[in-house]
Image 1 (cartoon, helix red, strand yellow):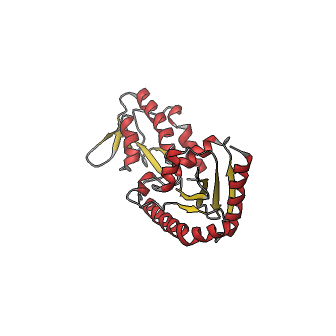
Image 2 (cartoon, rainbow, N blue to C red):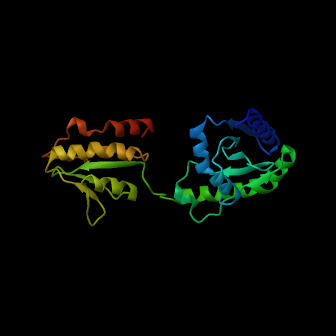
Image 3 (cartoon, one colour):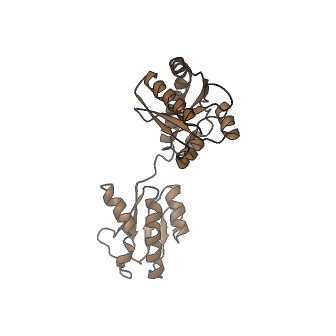
Length: 248
């Protein structure tokens, strides 16, 4: 990669960012930024010309334009041809299901003139990009809308633990660690083996924490389990930190 090539791309992206509507910042990624370039390749929101170009020519450098609201565009060389390519970057903070069935806001070809290119981006790609962003975030808001941010495990008089009906994500974790779902939808963990019970509770804390879900242990009001006192290790450190960190 010649210094001239990198300067050409970086300079073009800087001027383009200043000409687009809104407030944009430009950041150049040289060949040494291998991890960033690999992530960009995965997040390019295109199934047309830009995707084909990346399949034929692995990304060696790029410039990322970031709008004040977090929306991003990526500017690329057009190997063997003049001009540049620009494409939307898919948001990384929404689940994959939110993109299902959506048409990609495919990128476009730009000339070497950043001022003319800014007009092309504003009049075409940005409009389609903003529409797609709004749709994908709307889709994301409708995914698992009732998933709780805390699971409460309640001690029962027979020494078992019970969790009220939970989301599918939580149910998978509980079932994998010995809980059994009854007909009412409550998940229960037997207290016959207190060592295994404690091990299971310690295991689910970090697993649920990874999904942003805290875990809490409690006795039912006025009722203390007569056959099993929860040993100290059962209060999952991970869950306690998650609960405290979220102020819940």
